[in-house]
Structure formats: structure tokens, C-alpha cells
View 1 (tube, rainbow, N blue to C red):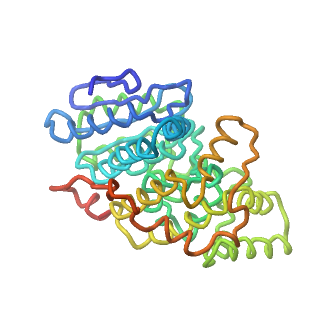
View 2: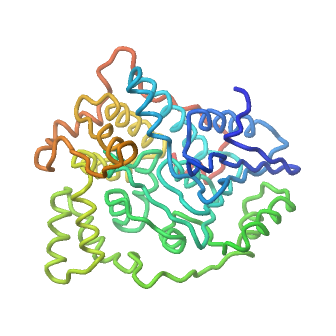
Length: 377
């Protein structure tokens, strides 16, 4: 594939800095970007002259997610299999990053959502800052937290992952550091100094890299006054329930005792989301707790192909219409209520597709992995 100006590459001795470069689209990942990143990550792994990869975004966002509006547009012109090609490449890239033999440092300035989390959270070092905003907002779009999110959300403390994945809650840098989505918090004004220091050190040794980032880090960034991190006990009480219906009912009981902005926002977010998305997302995160990152991605690929095929529900197309295209923010979900989404309907998202031309995601074989990567398998 020819180089693309959507991914810029800076070389400094043995360090490669990859810059996501669609600032007007908040660096939303196109097929061109995903293909190029996949090619570059494969090449750098084999290249002894590359020791460290730095990832960052041009402009005010790291990456606002996959360019799902383009995916929906492509599907409407042809077949859902065009979309399958995008997700197959994206999930393969996520797997490569999760099991990479060389350190990746991601600078998460500004927005990090959906697919943007997929190209950063799986890497070794995730540096957040004062203006970082993280979310997995897929249930509001008729999708589900994908890109391996069922692996990393299910490993957050308690049931915080279910809360973040089902509600689309936005986390700041301090909250990301506290829950483990980030490894370091570096103040905005020190980010470029840190980048210079990493390039100057010119090393692929994770211990040295970590020590360098620590020198610029704030170890205990302050939570904002109304941080949802202060609500962990309530989150665990409610989001540990077996079904989405039971989670909402537990939240309503909490609201009866003490209604405030956070509880009402949480209930409202769940009520606005696609009922089908909520049910498949909860099951996906629960299954992810017991699976390696590869198994999570293979299962999520089955799920996303079922979503795009649109036979069980067309909520993804309706969500994209309401939020991204017409922007009336009033999706008409079908089924419209949780009780109309049967177990059989949910099961279909987790089964192999009944299509002769379709096959499960084939992830690349990995060898000589560091213990950090082996632990994810």
C-alpha cells in the first residue's frame, strides 16, 4: 500500500512517531488509515532499527473512533461485507498492538473514543493528560464496545467496565489512570518535553521508558469534585446484576433513596441506548472476563458482522442516521424495549454466521512475545 497523508511518520534514530492525521474528522479511523497502520506495525516488528513506537493525533483529538459513517455509507452502496473488511483489518491491528514485541507509547491528548481506544489502550504505555476525554459510546449508536473492549473493560476494577461500556460514560485522565486504562498522567505542558526525552533516549527497554515517563508524570492527579470514581460502591452494587433489566431496577432503587444528577444521568443513558446493544454489550463484557484478547476479538468480529448484516436488528443503521447523518438525535430502536429482545436474538450475535462466504476472524500467529503480551493470551 502506498503511504497516506492520513498517517504521518516521523523518524528519529530508532524511534518512530505515528501521527493520525485527519484533524477535521477528529482523526476518525478510515480504512486507509487502518490498512496503513497494520502494514507499518507488521514492518516495524521485523525491523531491528525500530525500538519504540509513539502514537499521537494531529489537532485537538487523539482519535474519535472508527469512521462508522463511511462504513454505513459503503454498506448502503454494496454489501455488509465491505464493512466486514474494515472491521477485520481494524481488529487484526488491535490484536497486533496487544501482543506487540516492542513498546508502544500513546499520547492521549483530547478525545479518545471507540476505535481510538482500540489503537492505544492495547499498547504498553498509555499517557493521559489534562484534557483527555475517553468513552466507549457505542450503545447509543446501536453498536457495542468493540476493538477488544470486552477484554480491557472486563478487567477494570469491580464492575466499572460494565458501567463505562453500557452507559458510554466519559472519563477524564485522572479517572483513566485510577482504573488502569492509562499507565501515566503527564501535564499537557510537559508532553512535548516527554516526547523529546523518549526520542533522545532512543531505547526499546520498557523499564527505562517507564522511568522516563515517570519523571514527567503527576502520580496523583486530582479527581474532579463530582467524579464518577467516587461512585464505585454504587456502580458495583448495580452493575454486578445479571441482566440489563436488573441493573436498571437496582439503579432506580438507589435513585429512590437519593436522587442526584449522576444517578439520573446513568438511568437516562441506559434508557436512551439501543435495547439490543445493551444486551449484547453486557454479555460481551461478561464473556470477556474469562477470555484472552484474541478470543475477545474473534467473538466481537462475529458480533459486528451480525450487526452489519442487519437481520436481527437494524439499530446500527438507525443509530448512525439519528446521531451522525440526520443528527435529529432521536433514534427509533427496533425492538424498542429490553423485554422484546429475546435470549435467542442475543444468541445469534455470538454464533458463527450462516453464510457460505463468511469465516471467523483469522488472527496472525504470534511468537517470541514478551511476558507482558503472553499474559493477554
